[in-house]
Length: 115
Image (cartoon, rainbow, N blue to C red; front, side):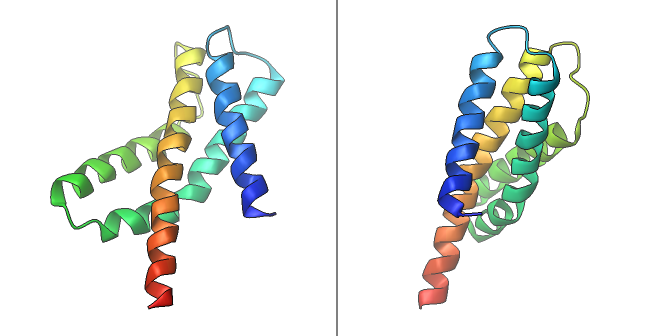
């Protein structure tokens, strides 16, 4: 799949999750959305980890590692917990933050390859 198409689908799913979280998000369509968000987290993790390893600021690296672990934990949690809306919001935010780390990781890898 084209990376730009995938990125756009991811962005739309984040927006959809945030909009649905304002209501009572249940049903098959919301379950499918959660599944896609979890898949995005798994897809983004390697590039996000690469970026975090490359951070020179130890405080930034420590914070980013904490965020990464939390995103991984959220994606692994298959329950909706007591609040399905909060669960959906957390998944969407995890994808959003990881995508930023992943993009930075891809850019720094591209820069090093070009050297």
